[in-house]
Image (cartoon, rainbow, N blue to C red):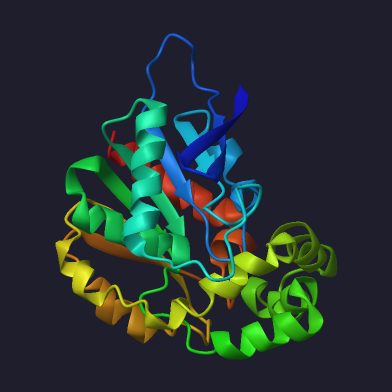
Length: 268
């Protein structure tokens, strides 16, 4: 079954949470927490849920400011510590001392740094094309958003995110139903913060079993660079997926979810 919740994490800020659990009712399943990337929502994991929710209790949530969570003010200050505190609140809400984590893009950054700083809370980790250092061209994105709107920005960047094999219908769905619905005020505060993100010092501190996924042809994150930072993580292995999408978790959900499920089943 799937259940929907609102979780207050601080005064005036609520997270939209969905728990998907189709495991056998006589079992006590382990929990998987899924952390989406910038400009997305928990619906970004739609294609993954059928693979995972038969074996795990899957906790998806809209990261603060995104999706149906409370929009964030344009002058707000972002930090990984605040995002980690939201995850702590989610785990408490779900009654979990620890969980498995899956993060994509900037959601991968959040999950990886949480694993580095709260190692007892993370049983294993799947990071799909995670952001290791902040995207440098966010100032240009923000100018475009303030000039033409969030939806126009989503449409203009979606082809690269989903790769050359994405259908027009797929691109339109992601632009109109997911990224294009991000509140403007959230992006006005979030995007100036992104270029300063650098999680490289945290990588050697990630000790849990980790699966990193990357694509062969993404110009945004060349595979040679991925290998260089992945090798700094003592318990990480790399899966290279044939494709050119910046966002393989959304572009190739079945391929990624099957690999993640195989990895997670080895850890339980």
